[in-house]
Amino acid sequence: MGAKNVIELLLKGTDAGVSATLGKVGGSLSGLGSIAASALGVLAGNLMTSAIGKVGELGRALARDLINEAPRLEGVRRTFNTLAADIGENADAMMSAMREATRGMVSDADLMQASNKLVAMGLASSSSEAAELAEVATQLGVAMGEDAVGSLENFALMLANQSIPRLDSFG
Image 1: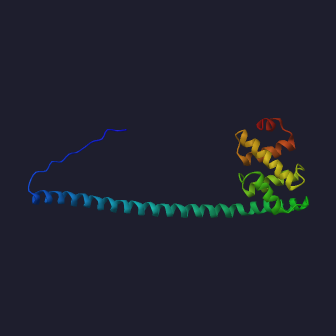
Image 2 (image 1 turned 180 degrees about the vertical axis):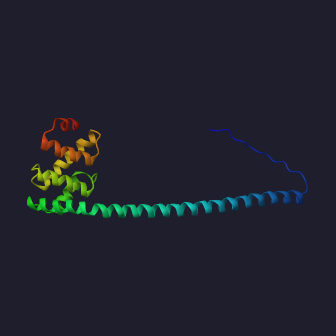
Image 3 (image 1 turned 180 degrees about the horizontal axis):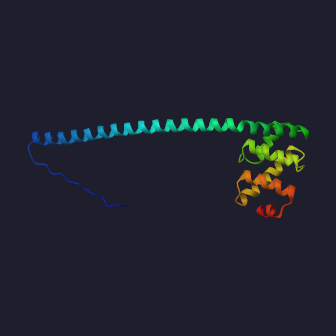
């Protein structure tokens, strides 16, 4: 704990003189407080204006990215729906099982893409198999220091190719 400093003021004089002096000091301190409050208000206003501008820029960038990605994502979604129907599964139920299996660590678009690979390569023939493979892939991948999305990709390719380097990445 730091040392405490104590300032002692000893004022001598008549009550009128002391009160007047202390009143001036108090007034100066009050003025300083209002100047500081005003400065903080201006600073806060500038920060808010800047933040709103940044949010606007971010929103425009996100909208631009969404517009650019929408056709690709739509293709992934259509393929997912078709492959789910091909194995006799409901796409919504399959997506729900995949979300639960990966504990929400993977976006829906990445889950659909991973599921598409698993089903298209014949590695999963039901939503429960796809969910189980996704769960194993994400758990092993995260345990080995990979992100969940990358581990889904590598796990599907590892199973399909039986690749030694990919097998090594999962221990």
